Amino acid sequence: MNKVLSVNNLCKTYIVNKKQNNVLRNVNFEMYEGEFTAIMGPSGSGKSTLLYTVSGMDQLTAGKVIFCGKDISSLSPNKMSEVRLNEMGFIFQQMHMLRNLSTYDNIIVSAYSSEAGKTKEQRKKINEHAVELMRKLEIIDIADNDITEVSGGQLQRACICRALINNPKMLFADEPTGALNSKTSNEVMYELNRINRDGTTILIVTHDVKVAARTDKVLYIVDGNIQGELQLGKYTEESPGKERERKLSSWLMDMGW
Ligand SMILES: Nc1ncnc2c1ncn2[C@@H]1O[C@H](COP(=O)(O)OP(=O)(O)O)[C@@H](O)[C@H]1O
Ligand SMILES: [Mg+2]
Image 1 (cartoon, rainbow, N blue to C red):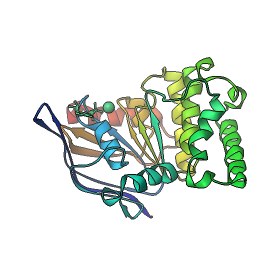
Image 2 (cartoon, helix red, strand yellow):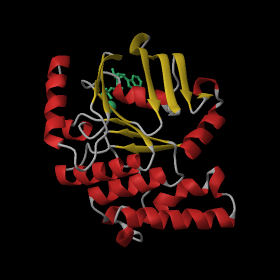
Image 3 (cartoon, rainbow, N blue to C red):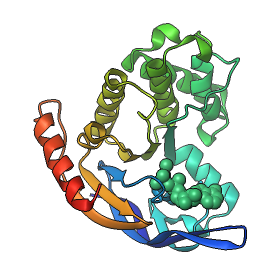
Image 4 (spheres, rainbow, N blue to C red):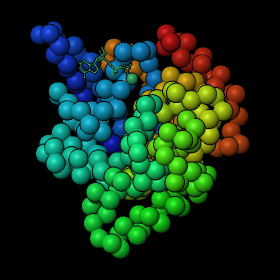
């Protein structure tokens, strides 16, 4: 299996009011193609910071992050944004969508400005891909709706379409179900599991046991340090969900959750 992400002695320090805050302290982990990993840990432990530094959205202070063979800490900001646009997908808790644009336009807008959206022919492909994704995630009916005219679950599924429009090698998700009720949260996880089965590597931050129980592996972070790792094995729709949740809950309790 190909290694997609390799994180070596990653450190991130913020300086606020001349005070040093060592948010990430020597974080090490790896991800292989097709893996689905969750990061859990107390609030303020550095989960979001970890996601943002390994995906090049935020600069790291020390250490090394290799993404698909590229040392992202050595890339120029321009090159890094190209990598983000062409090879990574992002989903957030707060769904950053552009108002006054239809759901469909929100999904295709970033792809149009990417390497794969320069020519008329390429844009036609993007349009077809957007329709295909919207059909798969069952939101094709709201393609023309303004983003203020759709439900939270529909909007998050639109965010997933947007994140997948460029066929990213890896998807980064920060509490993607944090603002959703349990039914819509399940729907979103159903889609993420399906995308993962189709080969996309996913790293997700979550505080929801039900959500993390549907991933392959959970990393537990405390004070910017990975304190433990739980292997859950691949999730399928036939998996004994409750058993996975119990195993995870009991491990989390041991970790001091
Ligand atoms: N942009 C920033 N500037 C300064 N400090 C930050 C910034 N982002 C996060 N932090 C600090 O880093 C720590 C970890 O934050 P975060 O990664 O958001 O935690 P989590 O996602 O686990 O709740 C917190 O102490 C937070 O105040
Ligand atoms: Mg966070």
